[in-house]
Amino acid sequence: MVYDSDVREATITGLETATSLTAYGAATPGAFVVPSTARKITELRFQTAVNCADDTAFGWTSSFHIHGGGVVLAEGWFPGTVGSIEGIAAASGSKYAWAEQKYLTNIPVNPGGQFTIDGFMLGEDIGAMHALAEVTYDSPSAGKIVDMDYRSIDLTAANTLVQLTERGAAVVEGDMRPPYDTIGELFMGAGAKLTAAATTCVGLAFELSGPGLMYAGNYRYIGGESWGLNSEFGGQGVIHPLKRNICGIKVKRNNPIRVQAQMIEADVGTAFSIMGFAYY
Image 1 (cartoon, rainbow, N blue to C red):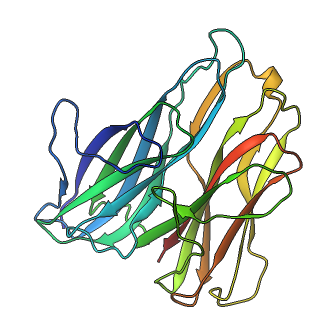
Image 2 (cartoon, rainbow, N blue to C red; image 1 turned 30 degrees about the horizontal axis):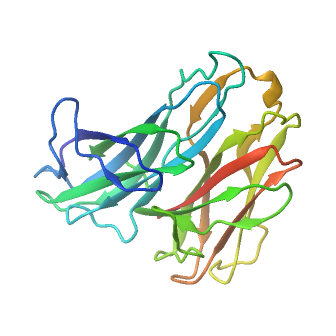
């Protein structure tokens, strides 16, 4: 095992449309090629930047799909960063924001094999999203995540649970059905498109239910978001990673688990919610 790292990037211009990350600056190396010395992917990092109009409110999420013979994955769907821009004043809509979504993984690879990472702009069409993916092999920071899957949905009403059913190109997948014994970590959050009249702060909450959970429980989580008061923002931009919960939830393989979310307290616009199951 020898440490190595590689990067690919692409500009995504279509909402809920797979865009393969095949570029690296001025070059186009294509798919990732697993080094002959590699045994595991030990870190994944995803970064997004946006190109959208000023003086307009936007909200979005992102995701990445890893697939190909070079990796050993049953699902390979990883949520990316989320973001919000609230622009209501002339020349507002600052987009000076940076964050990365990081996963500490233990994903087996096939040395010499190839794989592709597709990026998705989710939520609403913000014009263009630039997406970058960094893959690290055999680093000392190896984690436990062997695979991942997610669901997303748009929330448009307060205090109303809505099931997260979508994945990738807005495909309705319904309940999660874990192909593993343990959800080791949960990642959750949302990008928000606030109305200009939003004057009440609001939170976000997620919950899990269904026969796929090994043990009865509440399984409710703060979503890691709060929004409101768009009439006072004057142009704010933020891109940030998802909230991480290390949980170790035991599940029944291939049995349904329902993911739901709701805006708490008030309807401030649209929350583009997403939750990912990181499997051990």
